[in-house]
Structures are given as C-alpha cells and as structure tokens.
Image (cartoon, rainbow, N blue to C red; front, side, top):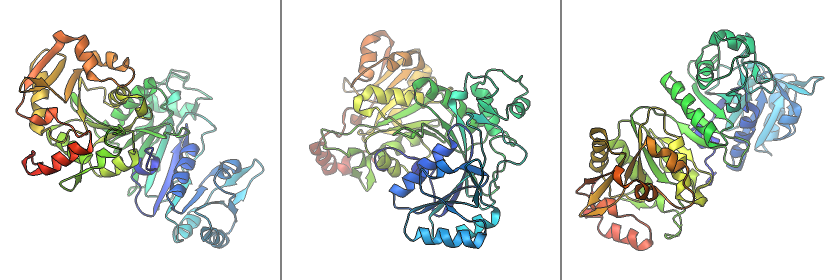
Length: 459
C-alpha cells in the first residue's frame, strides 16, 4: 500500500467501518481488491453478501463459513478470526452455486466481533456494466457507514440494453430515453445520482462514494472526469476513478470542482538525485509536498490536483485532510511527460488552463501563483512563465489549446518543449520571488534550505 495508491486510502476508511458495495461494472472486483489491501495491511475483515454472491468469488479470498443460524454463524466466524485476517461467510449455498446473503440480525451480531471491517456486497448485476436497482434492491444494512456505488466506464457508448445495462427498462424510464439509446457520460451521472438509482438505499448517516471503474486509457479517464464533475456538482462528496483489476486500482480521487484555471502539483517523481523520498522531507515540521500544496490552496479558488507516483501511499497520507484531487500516475517511471498528462486528465471540463507546480519548489508563494493566473486572465497569451532577475522559472501555465501538444509528449520532458515550440504565445511575468528558480534536488539543496530556513518565505 505504500507504493500504489489503493482503495483503502482513496475511500478514506475510518476505524471499524461497515462498507457496502452496490452497482455494476466491477463491484465484486472492488470488494475483493479492498479486502486484499486490508489483509496486506494486517487488518481483519469479514466479507459477505446481503443478497447472493457466487461461491467461487468468495473463495478468491477464503473458504466461506456457512451457517443458517445467526448464533452459529457468529461463533464460527469469530473462531476463524482468531486465526485468519479475512473471513468470508453466508447463510447457505443454493443450487446455482451462490452463497445466500446475511440478514440484518447477522450483520449486527458480526459487527460485535473483533474485526476491523465488514465488507458487504449489496446487490447483483448479472455481469452488466451499469445498473438501476429493482424494488427489492439494494440490501444495505442500516449499520452501514460507507456505501460505494460502482459503475463500469465501458458502458459509455454502448446501447442502453442487455448485456451492458442491468434493469435496462428501469434505467430508460429514469433517463426518459429509448431502450437501445447510446449511454452517455450525462446518462451515467444521472443514474448514479438518482435516488432510485445509485443513491438508493444509502442510510442517512452513511457516507456515499462513487467508483467509476475500468479507466485504463486516457479517453476513459477524460470521460470519467466529466462524470465526476457532474456528480460533485449534483451533491456527491467523493468520486474515485479506477481500474480495480490492475496493479494500479485507483487512478483519480475527485473531491473538488470549480475554477477556470486548475493547479497541477507534480509529486510523482522518485527523486533519484536525492536518493528517493524527497516529497516527504520535513520543512519546519511539515512534509515538503504538504507545504507546496498548502501554498497552492492558499492561492487557488478552484481545483488543485496532486499527481502521485513514487511512494504514492505515503505522499497521499501526508496530504490527508486537504481538499485536493489526487491522481495516480502508474507510468511515472517513464518520465515527466506522463505526469503532466495524468494531471491534465484529472482536471474538470470547466478548466481553461493548467498551472503546473513542482512539489520540490517550496519557496514559491501564493502571490506568485495569483500573479500568474491574473496575467493569464487579463491577457491573450497561452503560456505564462514567471521571471526573477531575468531568469525564467516555475510554475508554468498552459492554456487548454496547448494540452493536445502536452498529451503528445514522450519521455522525461515537460513544459519547456511546449514553450520552445510556441515562442510567440509566451508572456513573461516578473515576480519578486527567488523560489521560482530554486528546487530541492539533492541532499546539499536540502541542507542549504534548512540552513536558511529563517530567511525563506513563511507559510
């Protein structure tokens, strides 16, 4: 978990949670992924359906405890928990090889055991990518603290019909669309937000998160970001964009919208010249990456995206509690260009420009960021760069019209290539901040910063 950014962190799990997964397009895979992360972290979890779940799926984690009586089930699960971290269970196995789900009394009894988490699957989807629940679904126990509604992104562009959409007639009715119509990003967002769709059955006291699954290429990431924007605007608090059956199960976490200029903090690099882990260096008691992100938040009214890569789990933990969107770049070892691209895919559709901030430049200030954004809004240039005593530095702002050029970059190259290719689109902005020229690349840089810490900008 210290490497890739996992579901545990993306969901911001709290102690002793009851998590119910509903929806389609990877619900069971997400549940199994989370259970394995918890097991790797040394946590103890109980996994079960509340409706029906294939025996073979539960066996991917453990041979399930099967007992029809609540007392027998609880006793057997408790005994297994003394020896194993993950215990799967159900009330019976039917003739179709499906495990019959827990009832409300079972869940209450199991919640009293010494387990850190209970993970439940609350409905079925017949293998579809998108669904609307039937009258009897989902089965979400009132003790649930977190509901995760899953939707498969590969339903986009498919017909509103089987095998892509489960309960397709109900879905068509909620959307006021014809059966067989092409599923759009707007359709998916509407179904997920609808009280008879993705939000159905969520207990009043529970948190609700949407997981958009299957984001394995840039096109799907862009479409997912559009859906996430609509969900956040519609009252959702958190949208996870992921690919749960891959080694990088979480690609983006969206919690914030707004603003025509988005800020992208590049924090994915391994810091090889430093020896690794430089984002977590302490500056006045704060990890460097958190200091830089705090600076961007003080300046920005809109969206701040942090691109993670090396030691993503640790970096994400250092940013816990901050209102920022996170994106994991599984290709960060291939060079800076991949992090620029990952950051752009995480920006909302309303963004007209991106300001790229380096996580190893703790000497920049909110005033610099505001001055660059102000120059962009007041002028007509597509590239804005800061200048201190005649030297150009970072951060650099790029208009959306140039983003296709960024998406075409390869290897360890960044904004300089775009600046070199478009010299007449550059506006220089003079700033009184030497921090735009100074980064922390080596241990000597870090020692020099600490030696002069009382002279560096306070923040």
